[in-house]
View (cartoon, helix red, strand yellow):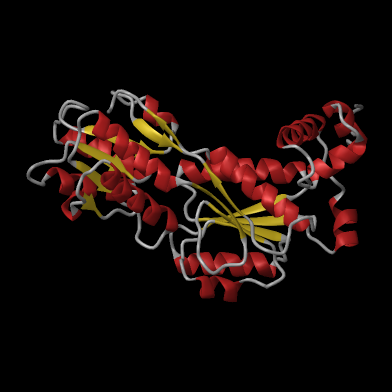
Length: 335
């Protein structure tokens, strides 16, 4: 393609080895296109530098060609990876994104949502900090397509994609019991957040499944932060008898957990076995490497974008659609 020329839909189709009609359907998120083929078309669009003519399409469809993404925190790799995947998928379909960091503050989140709506975004991907369905419904125009990503709230008429973290927590408990650990401590997330509640429920269900009684003294309240992971771990390690294993409800809590265990001079896994959530880069760099419940975070973001693109293209059924992704237990030397 010559310098200064603008890539066309035909260029995308040629690079992907598909018809122009198929390329168009893939870029608009239509469900009739196989996911593998959609990824192939999106990769081709990035390769040739294709972007739909935003002004012309915006005027024609009365859209701004912009999508808002609101997440609880930008410092957690879990959300940054999901956002990157969503942005890639949306960009391939011609949409710019505005990412707002609510910093775990419901008031800041409300402000971010209001600003995005005032700017007339075409749709919204939301990982909410607040948990009241009525408050969120009051904030958002009824006509605005919204997709919940990673977190669920009952009573909202929106599409949602999340990971089956309850199953992941159950798998972590089963693994530890199979390794001979029966006194298992758990570092929770913030109460009321769906992922935190579901992980705690999975922990309790996992104990039941293994024939173990739930002991509330082995649960430490957490807030999905490194500091919370440190404090919760110190609380649990002070119990008598001490826990034989610990599970941290997210990757930041796991950092605090590992640091606290080291500060106490305990050997891993001899004195205490450790399991975290999310497979971030550092989990394989610590010694010993950390066993984790890995979540398909990139798929989470890409799926949220796909569901939103389907809504924007008018291809979705009127009732909300929910998708659940499967976690995977990656066993390493820490357990």
